[in-house]
Length: 113
Length: 113
Image 1 (cartoon, rainbow over the protein chains, first blue to last red):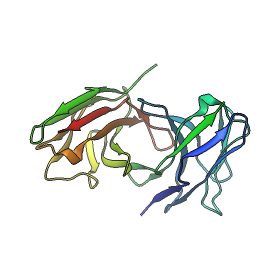
Image 2: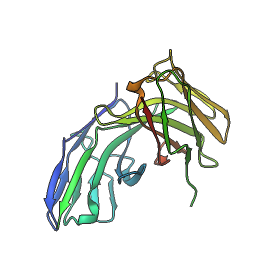
Image 3: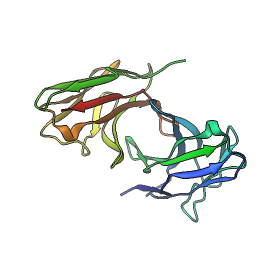
């Protein structure tokens, strides 16, 4: 079946450091890929998405590129801020007649001032 | 801004009691998902609907959980009887189509004592 694997956390960085959170997936067909972010006490919200191979999603300084050859969708940001502290989820959606969205386990990020 | 609304936000109940959680999806969204989030298991897909028809509820313990969409503006998740291991945050999410992201509610935090 389809699955998403992302790096375990927590990840702790100093402000202005470079961030990478790895995500790989297993899927049949051609999924859409997403990164969601969750702040304390809230539901998940979309951070960025990519719907086909070699697409790059970007938002708020975060980027991720859909790499079909390596089945990856790694999240990067050049300079993190304290306000980026949250839990980040990688997800895929496959069009299987309905569409099921499957999430990775989440990676908690702490950014220190 | 259109939002997914979940009620109640918090629920504390005793083992054996019935629990009903409600979700109002965003108008026009034809797919509704129920997820459960715990520290140990992360985000688990319990059930999802498209155009009010259940597509997959294989993630749900059938003997005690049930999910329905009595109309397009209401989705319900019931647990009867509840058990302490059901303690978790339950999220509802809705989406318009395959390539679009899900919109999450703020969740129902359930505690079963």
